[in-house]
Structures are given as structure tokens and as C-alpha cells.
Amino acid sequence: MRLEGKVAFISGGSRGMGAAEAKLFAKEGASVVIGDVLDDEGKQVEAEINETGGHCLFVHLDVTSETNWNEAVAATVARFGKLDIMVNNAGIGGGGSKVEDTTVEEWDETMNINAKGVFFGTKTAIAEMRKTGGGSIINISSQLGLVGTDISSPQYQASKGAVRVFTKAAAVQYAAEGIRVNSVHPGPIVTAMTERRRSEPENYALMTSRIPMGRFGQPDEVANGVLYLASDESAYVTGSELVIDGGWTAQ
Ligand code: NAD
Image 1: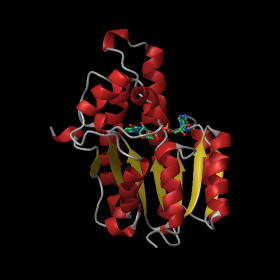
Image 2: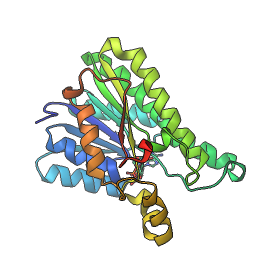
Image 3: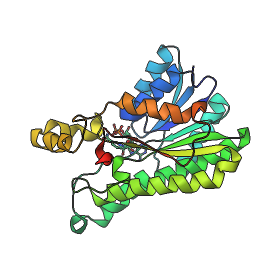
Image 4: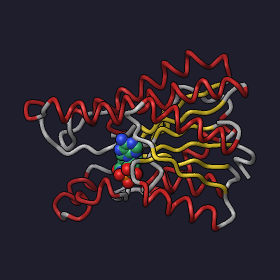
């Protein structure tokens, strides 16, 4: 198994890509902690993993609260003894307003969850990983952290761009301590976040027209990439950007 004996924390693991990663990591031998604001959904994922022979704990976590982060990582260590893998996956979506129509409240909410949440998750993980001599932090950005578009919001794209370069800063700062930090850049994926876009025929056609492969990706197609970065197979990989976007950024 590719994550045998490892302990992983996944923020935003109650549904979508985070839940897919939690299930895949557990199948590959990791003990998994899910932190999310969606308690019922998170407990369902926890039960599903535990009922199928895995080891999972759900903790309530709002990624914008540093206090919550400290409690969540402390609960992880109390239950499973250490922390090897941190997936900063929690996030909220884009909408589509232009810069002039964007309010300060909209900007702050997205930056707080998508960018500050990743900063807190990384900061909290480093202290714990140092104790065991290393670890792997995977920050979920987006293809929209690499290029701009007219069909998402400025704050979403800014938040994901911030995650991209923050990841590189942390990678350089902690490489000598064996803590690897990489970003993942999914394109449009079939999750609740893209439900509206996929259910409106015109919106769906517009989105798929921008994807060279002509389809949305599946959560598992991203989870497999995250698994590689979480495992020791990527031991020499840090500060990198893994793009899983059906070709969106290739054009
Ligand atoms: P999703 O909405 O299904 O899952 C996001 C999860 O994050 C939810 O469980 C939600 O409750 C949680 N979350 C939101 N705010 C939180 C907070 N303050 N504290 C803790 N948890 C919180 O969406 P998804 O598509 O699975 O998104 C996962 C990540 O992938 C996000 O960072 C998203 O921006 C990114 N992403 C998604 C797509 C896509 O097309 N779906 C594309 C690129 C990047």
C-alpha cells in the first residue's frame, strides 16, 4: 500500500475531491482525519471509511480559525500519534462577477477561506511534521491559479494564485527539514462546486468548450495525483505544480 503507516489530514474532506482523497488514502493504508464545517457529511465519510476497514476521524474545522486548526491537529496527534500528510483542500467557488462589481465582503470571504485557510493549515502542519523529521503538504489551487479567465470571479482567481506562490515559498523555506510542499491545479471537476455550471446547458457548453478534452474531470482523477504527492514516490518533488485540468492551461 502506498501510504502504509502514514497519518493524513484533509481539510474540506466532507464531500467532493476531499472526500475522494480521504477514501483513497485510507485504501492505501493511511489513517485519515477529515476537518470540515459540514459535520453530518463528514461523519458519513468517517463512518464509511471505518466500516470498510480503514481508520478515519472527523473533526469540526473552520479553516479561517487558527484556534480551530490548533485543536484539529492536536486531535489528530492525540488519536493517531503524528502527522505525515496535510492536504489543504477546503475552498469555496468563484461565481463570475467582474472586478468593479466585486464587494469587499466577497473578496475577504474568499481570500479568508481559500488563501488564509491554506496558510493556517500549512503553518500548523509544519510544527508537527518537524517532530518526525518531515512530511508532505499538498495545497489545492486551481487551473485558475495559473491563468486568468472571464468566467470566474477575481477573488477566486487571486486566492488560487496566492496558494500557488505561497506553496513555493513554504517549499523553499522547509526543504532542508524534509517537509515537501506542492500545489495541485485541478480544472473543472464534477463536484457540488460546479453543480450549477453543469446543470445549465449554456453554461455547461461554455465550460466544456474551454476544455480541450471536452469534459469535466472526476474527483478520483485529482485524488490520484494528490496520492502521488502524498506518498514517498514523490520524495524529490517540492515546490511543484501538478496540473490536472483536461488541457485547459495548455492552450
Ligand atoms: P466542494 O464544495 O464539494 O468541497 C469543498 C469542501 O470545503 C466542502 O466540504 C466544504 O464544506 C469545505 N469548506 C468550505 N469552507 C470551509 C471552511 N471555512 N472550513 C472548512 N471547510 C470548508 O468542492 P470541491 O470541488 O471538492 O473543491 C475542493 C477544492 O478544489 C477547493 O479548494 C476548490 O476551490 C478546488 N477546485 C475545485 C474545482 C472544481 O471544478 N470543482 C476546480 C479547481 C479547484
